[in-house]
Every structure is written in C-alpha cells, then in structure tokens.
Image (tube, rainbow, N blue to C red; front, side, top):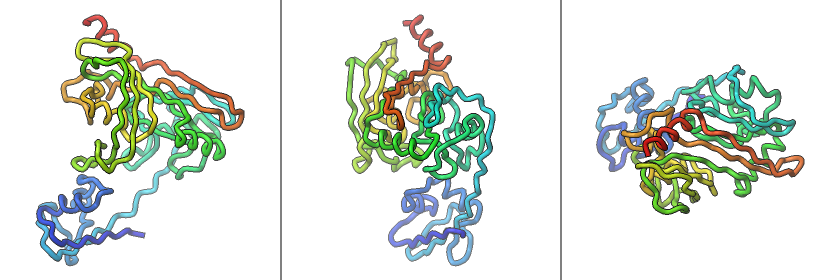
Length: 302
C-alpha cells in the first residue's frame, strides 16, 4: 500500500522543503525535494513546487511511492574470503564496495558477492542483508564477520552488543597527535544540519573510541583504533571532533587532503568467539595497496 504522511503547519514559516526537513527527521532534505519534484506532495489536492512558502493551517499530504523491490542477484565479485567453515566466514571488503543492496546500490554489493561464493547465509536480518552481522562504510576497507546460519548470527550479534568482540582499525589522520594514546567518549547522532552526516550531539547514543599512535609524519599521524561501541561513522566523527579528521574523508575531512579511494581507514583486526566451538578466533588483513603506497610516500618526504 502507498504510505501517507500528514503535516499540519502551526507556526512554521519558509520554504516547504525546509519546513518538512525540520519536521520529518527520518528523511533528508534532498529526499523531500525529490518527492516534490515527482509530485508526491500536495496541499488542498494540488501538487506543490519546491519554492512554495507554507502558511499557518496548511495541511500538507505526502503520498510516498511504493518502494521498489530489490532483487538479490548473485554476482561473481571475487571476494577475498579470509576464513570459512559451516557456521561463519570472514571477508576482507575492498574500498568502494557497499555492504548490502539499497535503492542507490542495487548490485555490486558485498551481499551480491557473498550469494555467489557462499552457499548458506543467515536469514535473521531482512531479506536484503543475508549473513550480515555488522557493517563498515562503503569507502572503508577491511574485515567483516559473516554468519552462515541463524544460530551463529545470534551469537556473533550478542558479542557485538556485549562489546566482547575485537575490532581494531588503522587510520591515517590529518595533524600530528602529540600524545601517544587517547580515549574519546562523545555521544553520536544524526546531524541536525546535514541528514547524511552524523555529529556529536547531547542526546546522541553513547560512543567510545580508543586510539594509539603508530607513526607520525609531517602534518599526518598513523593511528590504531579500537571500538567499544559501533555507531554509524563513529571513528570518522570522533576524529573530526578532536581535531584530527581521517585523511581522504569526503564527508568529515577537509577539502584539501590526500588522494585515495575515500577515507584512509581500514578494519585491520577482527576477533570473536566461535559460535559452535567456543574457540577464540582472531583475523588480520593487510592495508590496501593505495594505503601502503601513501604511507611510503609520507615516510620518504618526512
């Protein structure tokens, strides 16, 4: 069925897209503008334009189009599977690959590749995320745990929730961090300015990141990070917050940065207790080639 959203204007003023963006926290302004462009937004039975100025008493009706059904297509993406048994798998996701299909990325995702290379995947998540226990950003590389059945999925998910799993990252950040170790504790939530970004906000979810300096360069620092929590964009937001944004980060970093395939952030180490055997499993993945080459260039110019 087609979904409907009703918004009654009380005291708000200004362009309808901005007003709706302020009221509808789950949708971005660009999404709302797209609805207006496609004539899904009405007042008094008439489709409105993006420059419409709201008035007190306006009743805005939004008729959301039915979401397109995503078809999961197995694709030969030659994924690097580090480990696999009957319960779990560990995969090294390359930079530039989205973890699961969405409206903007229906194919070419990690899930598409998993469906081709792994026979069984857990079904505990929704249909577009079989086997996916946790995620990393599109332009972050590194290790992910994959559940091959629902029992394994529940065990791995519980370890993430209980903070008993091990997740270590390596990042190259702007600036020279003077202290050798640090702990960042700052709540993270959706930005009130840009809905595609996260930010440090008072009513956000608790987030804790630990870091340790590995190497210093002119204007850059290589660090290892360990997560206590797993908030969206957590490392990227926390490092920006303390003044050392991740190099190459198109969302949270400066415009003048190092050239790469996105942020220089790699999920290097992954550890968990095997859901069936109880064995402590620890895996490590080398830095991507472009990351290694950039570090070498910084060492040569240091």
